[in-house]
Length: 258
Image (cartoon, rainbow, N blue to C red; front, side, top):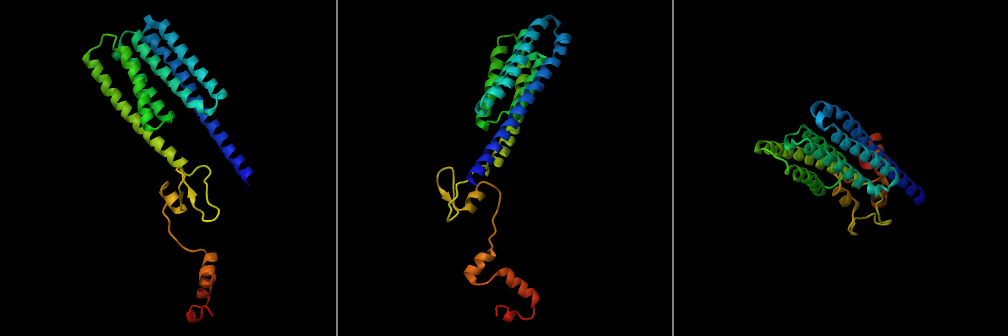
């Protein structure tokens, strides 16, 4: 039985890894398509910077393709880092486009930051503190680059307000998704349980009653009854049989145990 359980656990892990790998790959493939289609805007809005903008888009697309390839050859523990790196490259490339065109904070490419933050909030599975640090790094590189270009106070105020709103939305979405994932994981996996008293060992090594263990990890509430086997051992009768006799002889309750 233990071997079957181990095989089942291994199968679940492999299936989960496959789903995660395919999801990450799909997102980056979609990113390749969007970066390619957006080249039309380069042709219309910035015809004088076509070559440099094209180089940046090709670099991002090749980076995404490399990341997709790495998902299939690297162990699962590296997948999140690869995804983070791919999103960082996309964010830095958008910043580079704003810098190359010379418009900085006034560039329409700035809208791409919204897509980056929303994508990272959904697909980067970090706790809220680490995710906030990650977003701060993305935004820091953006501001450091563009501060070297001429800018007006109006442009920078508009962009700061826009980014604060987008980051707040991204943090909220990320928190809700992270909370949901943790709820799903709470009772997943193997639980060390005592073969005699049925207490469960928690992550800190303490043994807890099963009611206490489950109540602290879920919203479940317990109501207590007694099973027929235990009732017979403790009180000498089967409650199911008693109930049947009560229904069969409603007027002979005084002799029901006779």
